[in-house]
Length: 347
Ligand SMILES: NC(=O)c1ccc[n+]([C@@H]2O[C@H](COP(=O)([O-])OP(=O)(O)OC[C@H]3O[C@@H](n4cnc5c(N)ncnc54)[C@H](O)[C@@H]3O)[C@@H](O)[C@H]2O)c1
Image (tube, rainbow, N blue to C red):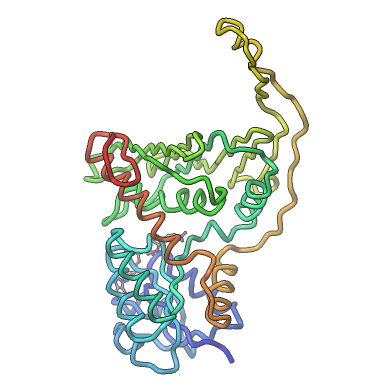
């Protein structure tokens, strides 16, 4: 039996949910809802059995619709998700989960107590590249994480409601959350932002994250770059992964190169540096990756979590962990770029 699904939001991202939901046999797309119903009509065209509406209440009162996927602006997520859960619907919501940690916590608790699925669309976690990176890191292939450097810059739409940290940051932060070993977590963040075009909100941001194992991660997100760069380097003590998402022929490269540190034993301080460092020059491996659209995997995971009555891979807690980093980053910006520990204290 297919699961009745409604999609809410037919703007920039909603059509991708529509296309992939229609290609997912486990779902039966019942409804497409947008306050501007003409947008929804334009996506579906004249020959469709999917019903259109501008009334969210109409969807929530349809007993045949068991699940809702929400692609509306972040500020609307809390109210829409809460009323869907209260109406007994499973929910897939776009990133970021909500506009604040407090709201996210309320939704996570509501989902837990209702036994309904609440999944956050952290799309990149479902790409074959990120899934392989997770295997390589968590399987110990690259050794201990020493540094992470992520650049996600291009000419992006300046969003009316969120700054670049809250728009693009969730991608990098959800990827870090997904691939890092469970015992390596961010302990503090600092963010520095710029708005050189006077948009009234940050259009570029540099985010530093200190990790519990002593490693440092850095994320650069930017709407103003004429060139598109989407590269992340995961530096490890044994190997280093370079992920270039703009290069389909070789998205991932695993370099067996790096710096080996030798035991310093009881060497005096002045002889330590030379004894410490030795450079290792080895092979580079290009892992073969399946080509599969991430959103199809998102839909598959959402439907499987509903049918198997289990938590999805990117559940409300994953959404919350990302929100905590975003909120701390915003606090850092407000404090002139101060380092903020993840229990909220400026250091
Ligand atoms: N996963 C990804 O890679 C990805 C990419 C882009 C955007 N997004 C996310 O998707 C969400 C939507 O972004 P967008 O760029 O498509 O926004 P958008 O402004 O282009 O579209 C939002 C649509 O939602 C409709 N809407 C707003 N409030 C509504 C309500 N209460 N009921 C029904 N319809 C309503 C608007 O009329 C509009 O058509 C955001 O959370 C964004 O972060 C995710």
